[in-house]
Image (cartoon, rainbow, N blue to C red; front, side, top):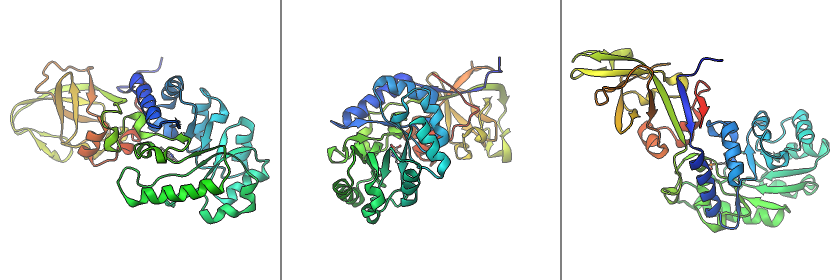
Length: 346
Ligand SMILES: *Cc1c(COP(=O)(O)O)cnc(C)c1O
């Protein structure tokens, strides 16, 4: 038996399933899929994918070919889309051997797919984010006409804001729909779902909101927290007034107090921005981080929870919108930062 980790990332499976159902409902007649790239945004695809599949999800998006295996164990190959597309013939061969579908993003990728034998695929068209995707000008290329397109998709750049770019991308997507024959069309990410029915097309692609991210006000009260990180206490110590804590003594005890040192640091994805700012919780007691977060350790003030002992588990305060505001990190970063030192569990 491998020794247990003093860090665990609890996935609230009921909240995850409820979030998918809520986003599917908000998508109206369109179906909601799931972006499960980056190991389901850090939460662990092996835990998240079966929960989402059971909730009703049928369409899956990963970024890298190396992420396919995590998902393929639980869902049909044809339901998995690889967003980065085939970078070489080996990717094409892998897609054809497994039945996983590439998202083709450029004319060279289109040519590569057709040269490898083609078959059902997806096509990304850029409508203004200028990241991946065929340009509108590429759509007349005869190679594009040879594709067997299941999903034609585009991606919104600023759906989390109220700005003119959303309507602009929607108008360009209408042009794409008129010009690219496909089985299904898809435009909206999590925030795009909240922009309303015009953005839903046939399939929506939520990611962050499945995992508890509130990226638009319309999702507040709809989306529940899913990720609940916890860290074990390694040591408890008593300080006197004037004692300093951690590297560079950025905290000095104003009075006698009790500290707990937890097995959590920036190497685990708890970045230094949480120094003298983050908090853990023990029941209802909120326990502030004191001093600098170091690589593997963080000190917290447990004066209000004097019963805390070595080996106790404490929960990080990690409600995503609030944590983002506190830390200056995005809700996406807050999830994808979790290191593999965290044991993923439910
Ligand atoms: C990551 C991603 C999504 C999901 O976006 P969220 O903002 O997390 O909902 C959807 N579509 C594409 C193409 C993506 O890369």
